[in-house]
Length: 160
Image (cartoon, rainbow, N blue to C red):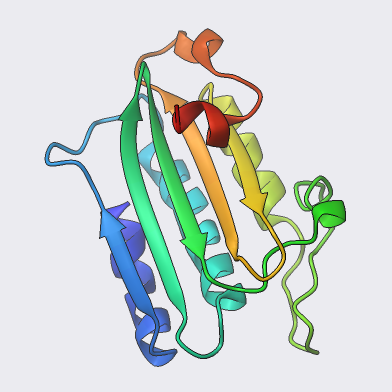
């Protein structure tokens, strides 16, 4: 998480965005490839920078331990993702809309991120409402083979 935030800090500085990071005192070691998790974090932070509010942009990053898993969430204060687009944004070559003519990428970042997280026994999900921003969260088990404790909706389970 810290490496991803440091890597993207300049992008957020250029956009005069506020970035809030909340980590536990003892940051856990996960049973996952740190470079792949960094790739996921960079994708989520890049998307947050792209879609946050143009004026007074804000991104919040949280890492929490819940039961036998760790939950990482990246929230922005952008336009949000329409309900009908939420299922398709994890499909290859599908993209959301940002209301401008800005290039939006290849449509591979979220599908690849989801594959990476699932490879390590986790789940990646989105929670969003129009004009309320988006929260992308992933959960990873604390130990190998712990994926049976994950629900289909990591956003809701990790909040309990």
